[in-house]
Image 1 (tube, rainbow, N blue to C red):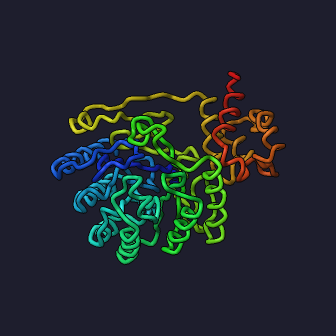
Image 2 (image 1 turned 180 degrees about the vertical axis):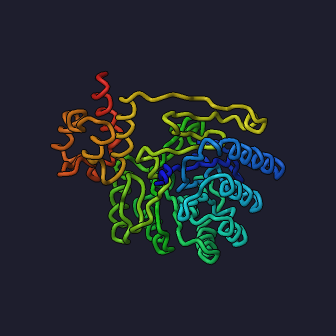
Image 3 (image 1 turned 90 degrees about the vertical axis):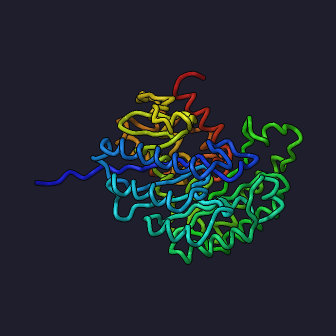
Length: 384
């Protein structure tokens, strides 16, 4: 009898702790919590993982992402316990991507060796800049020497897949200093680089500064984006998504689940899921989570039109864009009939390219993708 192939699933595990809160950070994280609070949260997270394992019995997990916050602010034994619970309760694909986020201020060779022993095989390092003055302006605790040591220790511990995050459009930064950051980062030989433009969020220290926050002007930030793409391409990093660049074969498998609208399940406060045909998200209430209370804050079964819009919004973030045949197979309708008229002006304007397979943003289009997608999706909903 032929065995039915299991569906694939991604897991996201949120660790809401860090040593200090960066000035731009709007993520669900609490600084300077005690070891006992870390241990209590680990117990709650493992309890949650065990409780939902049965609903995932028909799935093979091919990606696990431990994010935050700063997961490496936990003691190595706690991180090992979390990963041990994942491996003992879920069907983990033999070559699954197991990522742990890391702040260079919380690294150690012993920690990395523990993570590798527990099954982690990818490290995502929050670099942000290689210039110590820029790092201080962001409220980061580490300096460039810490980052260099993190990469060295991670490689020595056995991590073969390293990703680093960098930011542009930040205080004190110039186009030249940003390109220097990318050069130095590429010299550290990571496999993947994420480059994000700073977003000033309401309620953060940066948000409260208002006009007192001195940032590069819009034109300088635009040049940073385009010159950064060119430099990374010269160093062998292919732009496969608006903000993500990888050596061949090192694209983030977990993030691709989001962009491909595949199923994923989130655990912990502020974690979101798309599982079993339903989208749902948790509140930021850590206390209720520790008390084993339901913290589900949002839950919906998206309509077919919602699913189409979501697919277009996320797939167009990728350099390969929309494959019209794949769209037809997934939704039973023509992509060109659904969105072609709305896209035509952007094809003519050089922001979207059309080929035999489908549609994708040009580099110019990626930079203004949010405004373009807003108009396209609004057009489809008939609300414009």
